[in-house]
Amino acid sequence: AKAAGRNAIRFYQSHMNDAAQQHLIIASALRRAVSEQQLDVYYQPKIALDTGRLMGVEALVRWVDPELGSLPPDRFIPVAEETGLIAALDSYVMEKACRQLVSWQAQGVPVTSVAVNLSATEFRGGDIYQRIKSLVERLAIKPGMLTLEITESLMMEPGSDIHDELIRIRELGVGLSIDDFGTGFSSLSYLKRFPVTELKLDRSFVNDLGHDASDRALARAVIQLGATFGLQVVAEGVETRNQADILSQIGCTLAQGYYFAHPMPADQFEHWLAGDGQ
Ligand code: C2E
Ligand code: CA
Ligand code: CA
Ligand code: CA
Image (cartoon, rainbow, N blue to C red; front, side):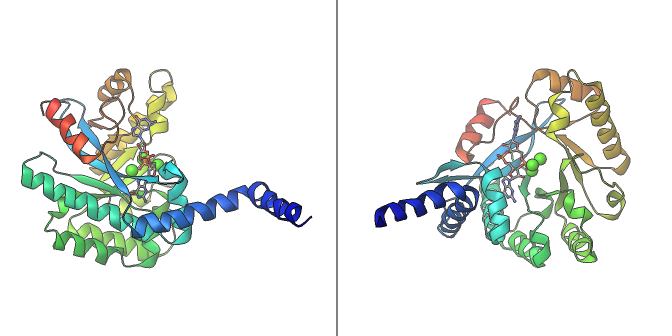
């Protein structure tokens, strides 16, 4: 009877409360991965549509846990945000990507720009400016070679702290990019208040460019908006030649996506770059 009781508890734990338990398992494994530096960073090229040349890379975190296997960022970034691990995770990725940039520069690998993703929750703590400033100084990186990708939701958050923080970061010379641009669209007025340098046209608008006239119109509007505000526009998630062609036709100059290259580890990226004759 005792064993049955224990089994019942185990059943309860494993079935009735799956999501919460998953969350705990991921959180504790992630805590270990962050502190033992078991996370990897992959790099995806950002390409000039007219010449096909490399214009920069985006750093994307990767995690393979010895027991849980490989988990996509969409599954563990939210956990990192809820548990407060995100600051350490993002700092780690930023440090690693910036060190990689320095190493590429020393080797003559023609990478002149690295973008890292920063969770919006990072801006609530308040020391993000200091962290970026000391990183850039410590590694002696030209600030213009670093871009921070942040989501639109950050711009919508009330409070002037974030506004001031972004202005100070921008004053360092670091680029500020709005990720997944177009998915929020609640208000665009922040574009005139925030010192943004780039818009990333969300993948959902790029997907159906070939057969959806309204997506084409939206993409064109974002590109024009960028031009009006003097912002670089990068199309995300370009998977086909046709999408790349349409983007070119409607005035988009920069793109990222599987059509050009998947995110890759640094050494594989170097081979890709060499093989591409860039
Ligand atoms: P994101 O910043 O919008 O990154 C683009 C995502 O689209 C990446 O997914 C990338 O691998 C994927 N992708 C690139 N090209 C294509 C394509 O042609 N087609 C399709 N279907 N997908 C493409 P990934 O690496 O799984 O990352 C997902 C999200 O997780 C990212 O979206 C970003 O929001 C977040 N993330 C990734 N790394 C970090 C990080 O170091 N820190 C933070 N805070 N967030 C991160
Ligand atoms: Ca991004
Ligand atoms: Ca994005
Ligand atoms: Ca995203």
